[in-house]
Image (cartoon, rainbow, N blue to C red; front, side, top):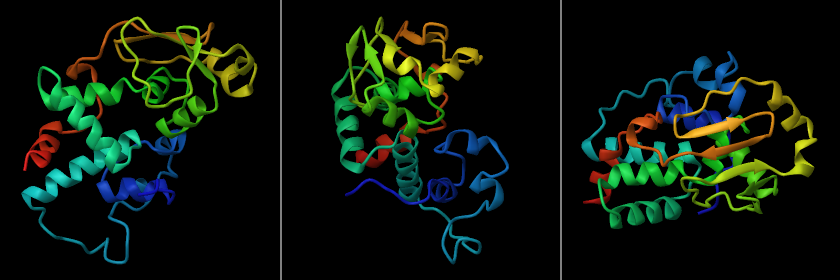
Length: 207
């Protein structure tokens, strides 16, 4: 299956909530779900079907995939990896998704959306522990330092970050002057604010 290339706002409307896929636009009055808060399609406005148990589980999985910008096979691989780890599978899954390099770049405030973060990583704008890293799915770990490359630091995109006040999760620290951030600890479930009911995803894959 190819990556979705249609309107991002359509995905938010399908899930019935903001997925923050378009950065600053999601916080403005131009946000698609603010203007048309109903499902897309010709029957979206009049849809009144009651969701089944399976339907709720499926929607939760789709929502998680869209939050983190993953394809079906990628997401399933993450779930299988989470299931092999010790602890709760749902929490392990969210931690794996949160510690992807593109998500960490987004959490550090170096990109306005995960989609933009993925593009910046792919275009070689970052190093991890001083080494070039252009794979968005690269898993960071506690102690890793993510920094904007010196050549990229002069671009307008990163120059404006130096003047921004960035709020980060407790497991990440950022030095905007140096354009670098550090993963001080692995995230715990209470540190992850993505509105996902992971137990529904576990139930879906356990069928």
